[in-house]
Image (tube, rainbow over all chains, first blue to last red; front, top):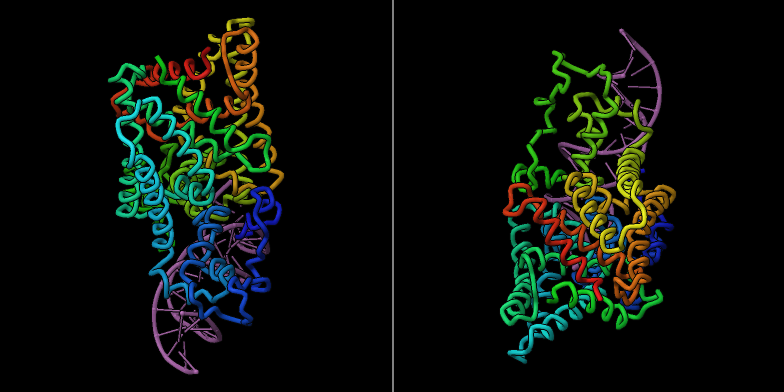
Length: 230
Length: 230
DNA sequence: GTCTATACACCGATAGAC
DNA sequence: GTCTATCGGTGTATAGAC
């Protein structure tokens, strides 16, 4: 009962295969080289992060053991500690990487062109946000659900990155208000409201669904545009 | 290290007192009657649910032990099993109660008066949603974060309640489109987008903050109204 | 209805061989 | 860099006394 949610049904609902990580029976050798045990790998580090990200997203940080992560990678639990000092740091590294990727991708998008209209800048932000989040469902899920499992100094670093990203949108909205394009009662609330609306797409969108990503982008963009309109 | 997040700092950040549930030293007798051990109480059941709700919201279902819940109530762990068959059912009962309260409160609000304008109906829904959610931060947090810890039949029941609530908003939006009050590209997406935006208030609002609940209601309502406007 | 005690399994993390 | 073995502790849940 202690692995309450490691059931095939739940995994199927979330579109995940069942790797059977209790028994080390179906551990997969990603490199394709024949080996009966161990990895001795070129790239165990990345594989550990990938396995942890997938398992944390499926079952939650607290419900996943280091032994489960090791089994999915195809090594023994002790080997994980060659790559991370502890489980908590493994979580933090995943979250920090995700937030840095988000911020860097956003700044790369906005970098070249300057002085565009606020409406166009908002459209670019909205479409970027949806695209980035739909591309990384596991990382997004962890970033929003596992904040309380970070120790205080780690939490503060993630929060700072989150606030920096939020500021990107706030600047756009503020410029739009100054230019007379937007009417916004409270800038901070509006910023969080728009981000919450857009991020919500990750809770229901599936590639197998009725709408394409482009269509979803359009629908959300129209709603965002109107929500801050004059 | 296994109780990684049971630290005073984190609790203070979430506005929770530190009950020190490791040592049974400060277990509180809520009834006020002097007793050195045990509860033998009229109302251990409700106290267990209250303690579980608080602890699950703070640390997450998987990170909270039955011993911690018992300590907060002031009984030994074995006594909990007079009130719940297992931990999983305790979680499910909390979530079902919350969703039923939500649906019942919504239907009580809309019950009496009929045939109002879609715009007014939407305003009532938006304000109700914000008020109800801000009044129950712990229950809301659990309802959104712990879905993956439910077994399949339990999950399906909660999902049905969530869909029924969603339908309440969908009906309003649909009526508004028919009446020519709203312009909506996709009814399902718009329904989820509005709910996501409104629910987002729970992630940042604090009573100690700059805005009153009434002001927050106003700001969100204006954004929702515009987001589906013609 | 609560207690004490316990069954049995798993946890994170480390030590030392290879 | 991975293995095997292990430490000390915790987990859920149950049994039986009172």
